[in-house]
Image: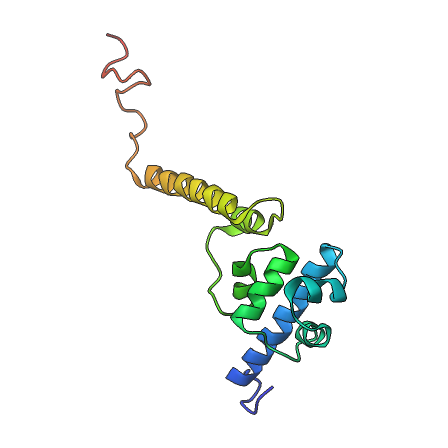
Length: 148
């Protein structure tokens, strides 16, 4: 940590990002059952360089992250978020799960996320609209007086 009485400095935060992205890449590689050597070939980066990235010794550029994402068959956006290049997208666990699904193409993911977000907006609007107060004379058929 920096010399700020326990508060992390900007340099500390950047170093943490480097470690975080490295750990994330290693985790993704492990879950995909791809060796370091295989990923280095798939991503077009040297084996030692990729190893340094995973150990948090190097901070990859956006271009290198994109190549690694292709090698892992995951969204480059997911790596950019982990690296601190992009802000974390909204949407919660469902959106995160869609983005992480390796069986879907980027286009399919985007369509699903668009539909999901449209449903969320629709529900937000419905909740914001004033509802019919309890005890009113309107029933579910829309008639003013159910006795008519």
